[in-house]
Length: 155
Image (cartoon, rainbow, N blue to C red; front, side, top):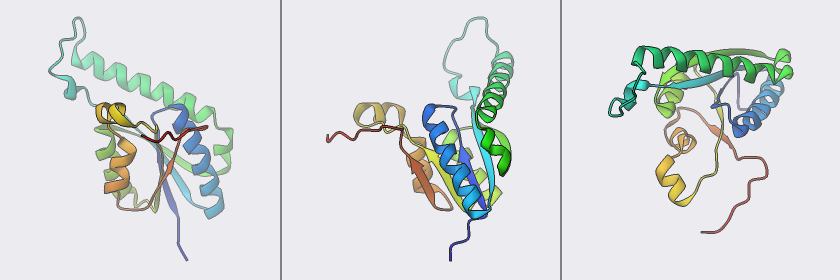
């Protein structure tokens, strides 16, 4: 029998993430597992090539962290059913897919549940897919959740 004791659910606070956490909560209840909710804060060092007038990286870093913490608090509060499961919250900083994979290893996750935006074509090429990279490189199974009411269109 498959043993699922630790579930990792990354969030970017999008509607798709909200849909994915509903699955994560139900899986956590069904398996009597622990849930870790993670958010990866954008690493401002990745934008050193841009000129941002009147913004220092120190201020940007602080603003990004404060904003992410507020969004996480609001995100958690929007799911009162979390009170019925054992969960923790973690904020990470860096490249999303790398940090998610590293956290899955460190947390010893048995399952990752992640929302996917369902981008295709040029949009997929331009924005990439964190979920796709996680699926390819994760140390454990990954359950992907498409946006609610997703409609597949043949290319």
